[in-house]
Amino acid sequence: MPEFQSVVVLGLGYIGLPTAAVIASRGIKVIGVVTKPEVVDTVASGAVHISEPDLDGLVQKVVATGALTTSHKPVPADVFIIAVPTPIDAESRPDLSSVMAAVDSIIDLIMPGNLVILESTSPIGTTEKIAHMIGQRRADLRIGANGKDERACVSVAYCPERVLPGRILTELVNNDRCIGGVSPSCTRLAQRFYKMFVRGACVPTTARAAELVKLTENAYRDTNIAFANELSLICERHDINVWEVIDLANRHPRVNILRPGPGVGGHCIAVDPWFIIDSAPDIARVMRVSREVNDGKTDAVFKRADELIGERPYANIACCGLAFKANVDDLRESPALKVATRLAQKYGSRLKVVEPNVRKLPPQLAQYGAELVSIEEAVKSCEVAIVLVSHDEFKMIPISERRHLEVMDTCGIWQDMPVRH
Ligand code: SAJ
Image 1 (cartoon, rainbow, N blue to C red):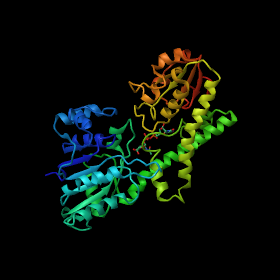
Image 2 (tube, protein in one colour):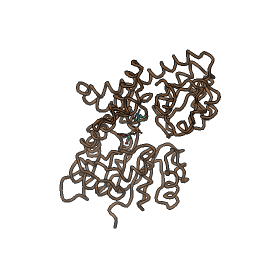
Image 3 (cartoon, rainbow, N blue to C red):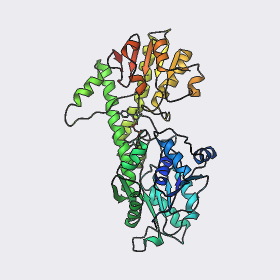
Image 4 (cartoon, helix red, strand yellow):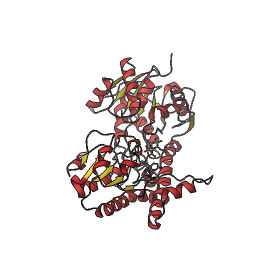
């Protein structure tokens, strides 16, 4: 009989739903748990509430076979996976309330032999805290014993998700995973579980190290993007083309500068470094400054756009892109959306917004009279263009159709014409 026959996935967002669907596709019974009734119903009908390539087909299939079902509350299972959001609060400190609520909801259901896995990005020590919480409330259970009688204990482990939005289904299966239990036996059990659906290596470590690994990956990327964004402002000061500088510098065999943009968005890279900074504020100086540089870039982009528009008092303005990055529909923590909102506040109906991945303009833009249009319509009806996201649809517009535009291109997609960045 298979070691793991049923899995409860707590949270059906960008990570929980694809994870639940992939596990269900291996023939394991999966129950996706989410508190929002509309998500319970949508997924139960075989549909999806998030946009991610190929996810709709997979969910439809596993729901149709009965391998994936949904519920608003957890049920007993062999494995519990916690994949709920871990945002930061107003003081940039980790908010673990959803994780703790998820643990609370399963504590009375846990049985000897069960595996509890945390996948949510979390501060160092969270997995141990969860193990402690279960131990305190369930004196009848032994947590993570380091012994032979693995099946008599409850195992608790951390296994961070590392998938890239837009490539989630591929990366979920092919990326290496680092797996840290609160004891070596917990790590081993969690490794056996992930090996059932992960083709990448399942590398063992401790829970605390695994927590920091996840945070480190995103803090590393944030710092590298901050370097690129700082360089773009230096280039602007000296009137040098930043894309050319990066291109030439990257010809050095040991240099690989990332791309500047309007700032860093999404719910991961702009958030996770704070978990490290909060844990060691006196040491994490580079990470803090990187956050400030990346947030500051969004302000700088707005000011430059405002100056450019100020030179054309009656012109219509094409605002190209709202998503947090190219070719996704996710507007969460999007620097492009922040810039567009400030432009809409100031320029109202002069603003023609292009976002090919959404059907409706967010209310914070619509309320000022800004309008959602196609990229073709925008280049035709505007004299100024502010490029905020490097969507494929924008790259495909030929120079003959945009030659008349005064362009500020924060992403470097139209380098065949004079642009400001
Ligand atoms: N960005 C730049 N310049 C670049 C690369 C990205 O400005 O050269 C910006 C993007 O436009 C976006 C932001 O950074 O606003 C983040 O985009 P991203 O594609 O770098 O990352 P995410 O947030 O989509 O996903 C990241 C990934 N982490 C790493 O690559 C280290 C992903 O693997 C993680 O699983 C995900 O965070 C997560 O969930 O933590």
